[in-house]
Image (cartoon, one colour):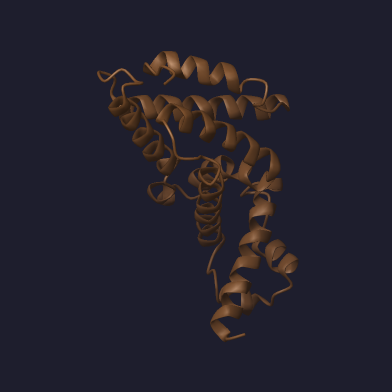
Length: 197
């Protein structure tokens, strides 16, 4: 194995350990020493990859976003936009149940933004989901299954933030979104003017 592969493998191990730690204890609840100890690296080996806890948290956010988005979109087959929207929401709910580190995304964003206010602009709160949802809404409008007078960007903001809020409340109650996903989708469809194809 060449040194770059080894370096990538080490970086990935750090991200995996840190993602799990952030999911379990939050940004404030772990120290770099905790992560270093769990990875089995020396401090020098760790600091070669990340120079601070904030840099590690930003890298974990990016890693979780990329892997979650790829995992979810892999479960969305080509077809009418309204069918893709339904599949995407259900895939997010499943992915969160199967991988607890995914639950850390919102928590890390919130805690990191509070602990390191100068990094708020770099957090990119849910931007990829806003963009993906807006693109699907525009596709639905082009297909004739969504009211063309609705502002797709505003509708995407509403749909994503409604989901995040529902997810947050479900977490607080110790529930999952499984039982609520049908009503969430029905209410969002009504609110943004989506009709079945």
